[in-house]
Amino acid sequence: MRLNHQHIPKALLDPTLFDAPSYDLHIEAGHIRSIRANDARPTATLMSCPVDIHVHLDKTGVVQRTGAACGDLHKAIALMAAERDAFTEADVNARMQAALLAAYGQGTRAMRTHLDWMQVAAPVSLSVFEGLREAWRGRMVLQAVSLTPLDFFVEDNAAEAEALVQRVAEANARCEAASGEAVLLGAFVWKNEDLRGKLRLFFELAQAHGLDVDLHIDEGLDADARGLRVAAELVQSMRFEGRVTCGHACSLSVQPHEEAVATLRKVAAARMALVGLPSTNAYLQGSWAETPLERGIFRINEASVIGVSTSIATDNVADAFFPYGSYDLLDTFAFGVQLAHLHPADEWLSSITTQPARAMGLPWDGVLRDGAPAHLIQLKATNAYELITPIGRERRVMRRGEWVRAV
Ligand SMILES: [Zn+2]
Image 1 (cartoon, rainbow, N blue to C red):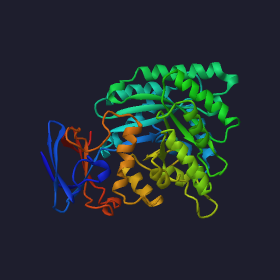
Image 2 (cartoon, rainbow, N blue to C red):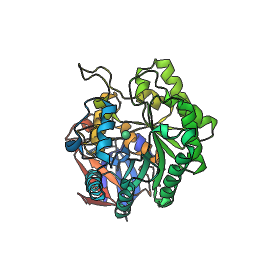
Image 3 (cartoon, rainbow, N blue to C red):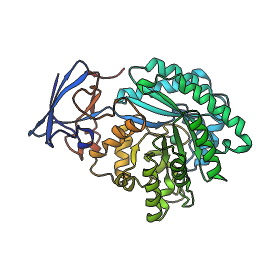
Image 4 (cartoon, rainbow, N blue to C red):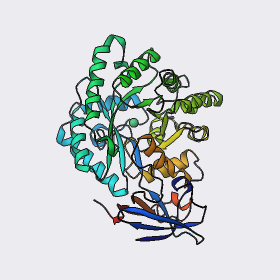
């Protein structure tokens, strides 16, 4: 199969290829066989299939039962806690499966979901997740993260904490690591008392059990929420570089520029990946009593300039934390482009493809090059501006070199 006159953003293209207005691709046996530069005007945009590095498949689709929190994160946590006790396997399975079908239909090729994990015993959502991971193997790479309040990781509770991490490590051992599957250790970090001591214990346990880490961190607009800085300092001093992802980091947006940039430099030195969640942040952060002025997105442009891995992801869909949304990552991306002034938009497609693919350690980084798998999306957009319009985001999805419409 040939795809001619395709615009490919530089960030997604083999850097050894010449800069050109468009490219012609030869696809064969499920792979890209060649990419040639062309002087012709592009007729479409080509990208690798997106990677959604931060979702909550256990919570999704319950907003009709819980109601929405309208800007109050801690109310959302309470609403969800009441609902979670009633989760059954069948209910979780149906909601997760619907989310996977929706994401797959839009072209997503990998997802990392957080699973609420409140006690030593694994939640019901883990066994459901593992069943679906097997059913979807070969179509979608699935990773999971345990999501536990950081206060669980305190010296007084060290035996319980150790036991929980042991369960997470056992779940990680059941993964097919070569295909990119993993189970990570996670925590919710928000202005905890003795934050440094708890995070140190948390990282020690992750290291001892060989687990990568993904944190919900500083999800709020208090300038004195400095979990990200503490995490970056610990990661460096404990030689845990390159193993940690952090989502949210909203408080960076309200700290003085110099302080935020100094933290981002530490994050870069610790080779931590940051994930912006524009739709949930915009919904939960900022005033609800009057028109909000703060938007909650972390300083994603500054982070990118400093060299921090920067991804954009979906986060919550149709739950107490965010009652709207979809599993079309290009939709959240378009919102993020406008919310955070990401420019040029086509080059920022790396934030939903190559950046999260590397942060997740996937076998393919999402760069279009000779020999790469032909998991591609062809968009109607022929330039960066059309990319943000609904018509520009109309697409055909290619899996293993074949056009597919849905599952
Ligand atoms: Zn989240």
